[in-house]
Length: 30
Image (cartoon, rainbow, N blue to C red):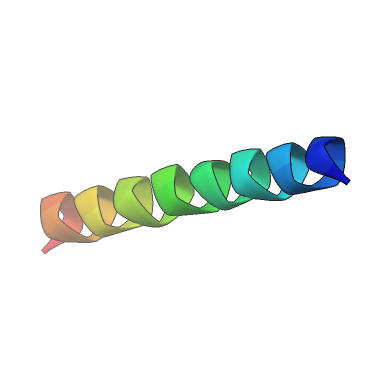
């Protein structure tokens, strides 16, 4: 159970980092 939560939280962190990078890329393009 704890491992699943850790994997999900890590996956969410990766998504958050990716979305932040997309925002940065959009800002640079504009």
